[in-house]
Image (cartoon, rainbow, N blue to C red):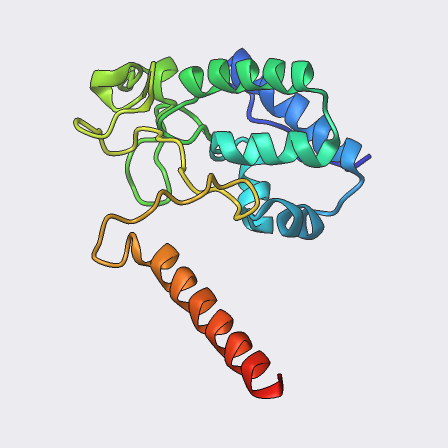
Amino acid sequence: MSSWQPLPERLPPEVRHFVEHLRQLKDRTGLSLVALGARTAYSKSSWQRYLNATQPPPRQAVVALCRVAGLSVEDAERFGVRWELAVQAWPRVPVTAGPVSGGSAAGGPVLDGPSAGGPVLDGPSAGGLGADGPSVGGAVPGAYEDDPTLPWWDAPPDAPSSGPAAGRLPLYAALLLLALLLVALAGAVTLG
């Protein structure tokens, strides 16, 4: 089992619960962060941020980790529910171990988002996750949005293009087949 750095004390319980389970799932794979990055198409540094609760992971990263860990469909769905609860509660300003009213390295106050009276950015109108995923229209700076990046092996097949070459592939295949038949026929006539 890995030795993990402690999670920030003021982390919301939903986030803490999710990250602890995410860490257990990562440990279950037996992979290093580098190997996990290679198997999931998310870098070592991204996994470090996700597993240390610095940044919420995109849904696709969680799906990829569940796949690598060999979770059943039901367990992966439960993990997806944990992810949704955690993302809704995730602090929009990084949680720090320092004082709430003190100063940061940049000289500004250190805030904990909703728990420190900061902005609550949940809901579709605030750039949070709505019923259909992240809202794009009224995105608020600092609001969490799910990363749409998928590893190539999980990406859905591309829709056929609607450009000028969209219907030409079958035409080219038919012409090539016709040319091959003509060559074969000509070869048979000359030999016979």
